[in-house]
Length: 404
Ligand SMILES: NC(=O)c1ccc[n+]([C@@H]2O[C@H](COP(=O)([O-])OP(=O)(O)OC[C@H]3O[C@@H](n4cnc5c(N)ncnc54)[C@H](OP(=O)(O)O)[C@@H]3O)[C@@H](O)[C@H]2O)c1
Figure (cartoon, rainbow, N blue to C red):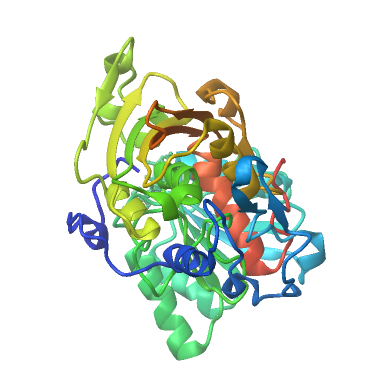
């Protein structure tokens, strides 16, 4: 997250390039909206596995004070949507790092995820601790060796938990095998490398179409981007200016490679602003929301958990009770998004799997609001979200193996 931008993301332009699936969802909704602050359902997101189109009631509710709202247009895929009860064999590249470790913890508890290969250069030869389903030893898998396993049909899903700019060689090697020998594994990437690549599916299930079972290349959103997109999307159609996102992260966001942003001594009683313009996730958020945002990140002295305070100008007045209602309706039924009254605290989401959104404030004009969002960067900001998308892509229930 704090590591150098990938080539794809580094371009630095504030221009918002090409509509994403999230933008498309929003545009469809906007086109269909008749009422103030309503979120009508988009049929485009219901074209999937056993999810029938249902016209209006019981989804529609009318909020107080004349703000028509619609309950969640993109509800979760529960057990009834699951189509697979066979284990999936997983190859994890980057298993020593923070997100790799968070993935291992989740695989350990998942009834269908069978971790078969775990790669690290630094601790190759060491036994993997905290995984009891089979005895596993870290090995240094090169892209060529991963390709060999792909050729032998050994892996159903590759998880890339590598710094930005590193996984391309693995992806290309696996792609090459699939082109020539017909392998069919899925690749899920936690880095920023493919988040703006339209050939990849951006996996933020609360906001993007849940029908990803045919997706074979999944990019997992950044932790800041996850919280920002969840915190802004319900108000997208009523923006009256550019949202400004003030963000603070714990230092696990900077990965394990020593640098000033994970230097515990430097962070003691301290907070460090960094990448104040042009952070890779500024571009990611702008791209996927379809509107430009300003993003101002900081790192502080705690280990895990991030907090965002988002200032959002609106094009019309709103009352604070209606503001909260819009978020409650939009995320109805979501087990990994909790709408709360007070501003969420990092403490309450640290090590948890949900994003909390709250602290809804409206200024005296009624046209400037502030929304807060907090989540654990290694869980909902990385591993939990990755597993959520893997579940959908592999045909399991969306929350399978996720403590909700
Ligand atoms: N940390 C977060 O909060 C967070 C949140 C969302 C997304 N992400 C993204 O997730 C990815 C991983 O982040 P992280 O925090 O887990 O990083 P990390 O703790 O620094 O771990 C990086 C992993 O990649 C391996 N690695 C590093 N360079 C490599 C290379 N050249 N070839 C092969 N393996 C290499 C490392 O193991 P060895 O050195 O032993 O090989 C380690 O397992 C990043 O792209 C980051 O942007 C992170």
